Length: 267
Image (cartoon, rainbow, N blue to C red):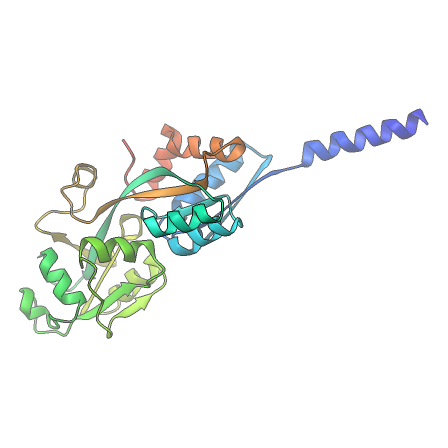
């Protein structure tokens, strides 16, 4: 009998050793590389923790938080008041944690000589009022408008800051990720698109907005007109392993990963 109880006790000890704390998060494709890289670093330092990270867009992550299917919603924009109200009606109290700064960069093909666009010009291009690059000092070349899809937080911020809520032209290509936008612009001589700074490659060229480039200084001080913060949302104040993971992201070690991924640190 004593041997039997010893075996039961041993099984509980072994189960406790191998049990893993699980953190689930989904949402913004802009936040995705930061979430993945910090999750890997955190799991390396904490073998008893498993962090699952998925993309899908900010709206998808927010909906998952509302439905209780994830613990963290990654978002490249602040939640809307309507989303907060909807969340609270379901017993969910969205609590934001800023994890990085970012600028939405305007990108064109490397052969395009245009160096600067005003907010007004960007709006006219994306709403279909300007359709040729020669109208903004470029070559005689039709403009191919490339945008993010409407589930994207990047689209929401761009729509608010650059388009003032105007409808994107029906001829625009609406793509599902930052990578898709950048790769499409890279292969389209007349293309124009936008993406988070962490996704910009040498295959495209960024243009200034109102004669201001997206840099660490201009994003942090807000002079770059398309600056924003990136967020992780939890249901109420984070606790347990989720809280420790968020503290890690905001720490010096976590912010070093943010910088390595091409984004801008909080401080």
